[in-house]
Length: 279
Ligand SMILES: NC(=O)c1ccc[n+]([C@@H]2O[C@H](COP(=O)([O-])OP(=O)(O)OC[C@H]3O[C@@H](n4cnc5c(N)ncnc54)[C@H](OP(=O)(O)O)[C@@H]3O)[C@@H](O)[C@H]2O)c1
Image (cartoon, rainbow, N blue to C red):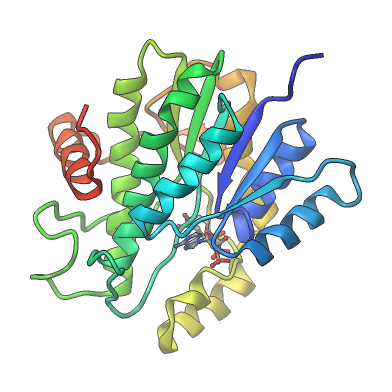
């Protein structure tokens, strides 16, 4: 028996990510949880392992910070030669405009630059796996991407617009990524998990955040249901070789943002904002 395949789940300490990590663990992967808080990450790992001999391992990272992502990626690469499944899932929203210590609007930094930089830095490990898959949790709530003002310096900021912009970018970036991975036996797809009852909505802050949290806790599907399509994309032979696509409830859905020139502009912008070589 060879070494188990390795899966990394970002934001694996809560919500949908926790259920994705649990599903991958039970499918026999060696799971690495990338968590903002080591304590919450370790608690999630114990919960997933439920007494099994080997629990998921935990790496601490703040996905809103390029510096933190770089040291997390170094830690991952020094512990693992290859990566079979990368699930980009860590995400946030905020009803008020906030900036990171690096001067980037928080939701853009976390939800889009976080996915971009993590994947760019781990790409060598993905390319070393016999076959690898990148699954990025995006959303149906996707619009308002303005490549000339991703940081909302000129536009009026709203929590929904900045979140929807980042999720549109997740979908467009996935297509640009899939073109770069062609021939490398690494696929890249994005998906919408449905409306899911998680802590995400309440984290937006203010009355709108509280209201959204309350509505979703009653109307949303369970995090386990929200994890289903990602787990299927990460593991099922049915989607072997399928790449550059957007899925909802295990069905391929035509993405209304398909536009190669704009996807490439987005790629170049993310590369410039993260200091990654734009190839
Ligand atoms: N819930 C829905 O209805 C829905 C619908 C469409 C798409 N999505 C997407 O699904 C993904 C997961 O969301 P969820 O609903 O499961 O929300 P959640 O319960 O709030 O989980 C989000 C995870 O991301 C982590 N995270 C957020 N910011 C981070 C940062 N700067 N550094 C490190 N980790 C960070 C959180 O860590 P902490 O515990 O430390 O906050 C948490 O583990 C997101 O990409 C979201 O946009 C959700």
